[in-house]
Image (tube, rainbow, N blue to C red; front, side, top):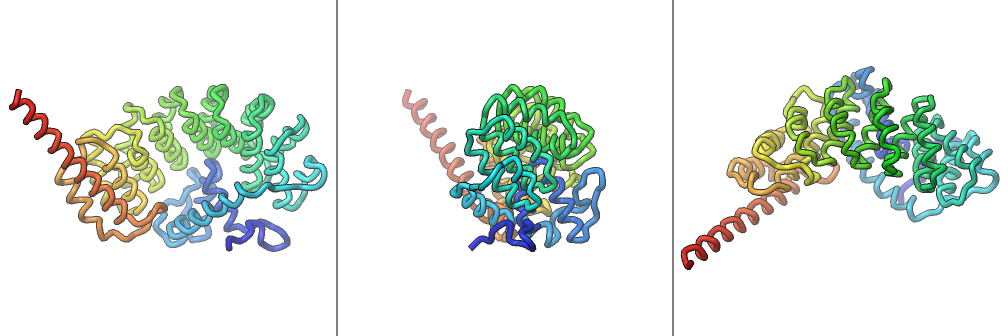
Length: 363
């Protein structure tokens, strides 16, 4: 049975479960990698707040798979439960116990709430615990009222940066297009966490106005920002982003998280799979990171005739014994699935050509 996230000393939240929570949110992802890097002894880029080396170390790689699986299971339980609280929510959100603060923030999402309770949730966006900040933002987004939107927009402009980043994440969940101008401004913040969260929020909204900014942020000094920009461009499916994403994917010196997001653009099936993309994704099948290889194999199966090439088939065939784990499973499984998909597609293309040729001959 999955443990309670607050099963720690004196009711304090378990650090492992806080890391799980941080896997789901933009600004906290940066902090997550920095924290894991500290615990695993990896060097840390103080500007990017991310590990300098790739996440192939045991703490940085195996933990992602295990924690990701446990978090997905745990969030299902959260959705089935209805957190309750006793007492005044305004005072409880100032309680020293983080579990009580989280429960109250989650319960307020059930509504209805008054203006004071909305402002209390806005205050919780600056909570010292990232999971409480995340829940306060989700609750404000779940309320979906005009007052919630206005409060989140105000929080986006109001320090500290933890509140600004949490507000951006919440606006991405709310997906109200009226927040796009404010998020575009926040995406140019001097703080890495705010930029990251604002870009991810714009990506969730599918804001086409943000595409020029995403392309610009692919050259940001912080790897976390470049990762978010690549992810947002992948969701947009904009053809103008193909060349820029391929540059990030093919750069062996690029941070592994950025290469993952670049490869994921084609795995999502929204980005055009042209001949250049096929070449680079085929090369990415030999990337040292299993998650990049998984995305590359998945992406090669998402396109049309461009991937129907013997070189691609041979490269996938070579990975049928690749047992390394990505978050979604072994690389060998997705390589086998893509190989079957491409063979079926090739057979169908040959069949339709023969049928067309037969009809032409008859005519």
